[in-house]
Image (tube, rainbow, N blue to C red; front, top):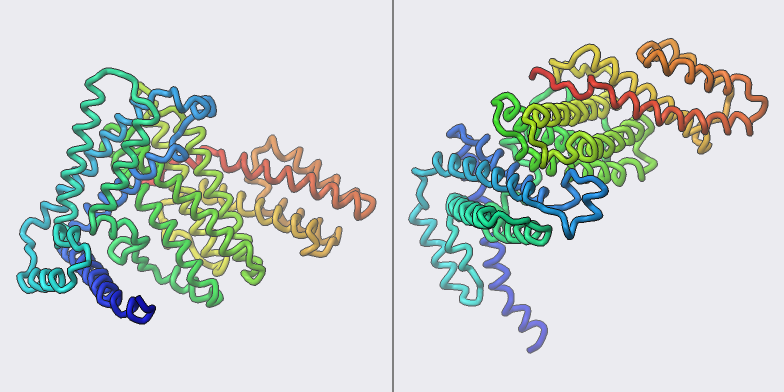
Length: 463
């Protein structure tokens, strides 16, 4: 068949496919607006968050396992993880039923149904069966609820056999879960959208004013970073609600798995978008580097230390404390990152405009960490020849830090800090000075990690 003829024969199919995509997107957006009008948008957000969390939890990279457990994955018992998924399925089922409950009175418009049927018969070679079965988003949610019930029954059947559940079964359940999500037409569309006006709008004049100060070519990336961080805070509010209700908490490992995956992804995205572009600007680039570092380190800290082996913990008090500490760490990390990013373009920005509940001790610790990072960044720029190697300028930066933030350091760190400062002051030549700066930079990196471990970063704010 000639190329032009093949192209003409494919055009009706492509036109129909394009039409269905547009119609499906409009159906979803219209349905979401209806849910918002009925006050059910938080049910939909909860459903989306838990579904994404379950998908992340089925990835072994997002499980809080020890190194020994990771080496023994083929023989490890995954009964605890499967039990957590059972609880998460129940949570998703509740959210799905709540969404359907508010949608019970909505029916497909007759004209809309006829329009779909006409398109179906007009394009015989277009596989439209899935679309015809799921005319509305509510149809997809109903299909999802049925599947959640099926997977719950399957898990119960395996549990009744009173035997070890190995890694193969866990991963098989995960693959089945992902396939079913994709088969639910509107659920798949819902989860593929990164942001949504009903969830993620930021009505804050101070943040908007700061974004206008960012150079146009970096404004979109800066705004996206803030939106991601605010979305993480919404996930954390779901965990906070569980802590306040004093309900079983192990299933919240599902949401921590989602946060671990998305925080690491954002960290890498920031490095790509900001740090590899020399045109970013020093202040914004320095803030982006600190944010990328903080997201990666805190996500890793939560998974590899705070939540490690929580699946098998039997003491409810210990479970509560570890979930609460992890929640506080990630919440304060995200808030600090937003503040750091906005203040890099608008130093006068008052973080209380966004987060009024932050304690004075937390603010002081954040400033100390930021000042240590700025000093480290300056010294690294000197080593990399991006700043002039001027002994007088180096000492002036050290004196400025001592007069400002040194008092917030633990007293035991003062002596070592002063020892490095003295070594810089008495360096006899540029070679010796560069050597001492490298040692001091390594010390500052360790100091930043120690400051980040302070308990104040784990405390959950009241609001």
